[in-house]
Length: 322
Image: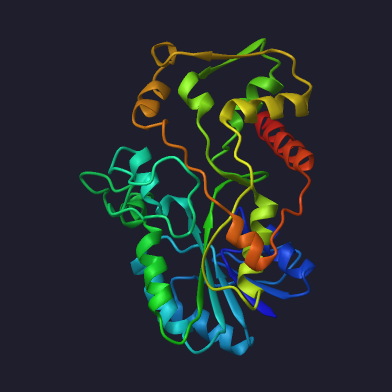
């Protein structure tokens, strides 16, 4: 299949293009600044120009589109309308933050189903725009788009768009080389510095959420975009969800670190981290059930866990040296 990737040069884009090619498909990337030196073709085009993206899809006979940049409804609805009738499938990178438990985690609303892993049918948030500032950010603020960020209305619009079969892939916390949020820097950097001990807030250490290594996530997105049976929503991420203490132990073993992992009470945590943790209800795990993705699409992680850890450590070491 000819598959267009919107956001082809970001964190997930390059491994997604590689995954599509490894599966025998023909990836075509789209990025605002193009992709000089990329191993796959990347066209310089602004995703916000929906008519131009649709024209390119039609000209290149694109059969499926993977949208890694669907962040706001206003920025995505015109694209959905433009692609309708032109491509056979639209696959969007959604998020586990659509679930109501995410709202409960941030103390925005109660969770009626607290505790167990979240299936694709679990209740969604009723409070939209979880990152909206009060007052709203100025229009010239680079983060102004976050005031209107929400995957829930985008998923709904994609499902309702006639002439465009749609799949929503709800991503976990994605880590690995190129992770802008550096999700495991809190563990890896002290290990690399050979600290004698690492102190973790006790509740944070015991908290569980679903993570996914970037190349594994890319493989799941590629499957969702091209598998003939794919439809609706799919959770993506590792099948197991160790707590943060367990993750720290894994990275310690990967680096040969033999220091002490120590849990401490919230009162002993320094600001601003203490205030950030106080804003979360860490009694609520944010673990998703990925069984449907595995059963319907035949998904399995292509990366060995030890290799994922080693690559993540190497990337953090490179960044720390810069």
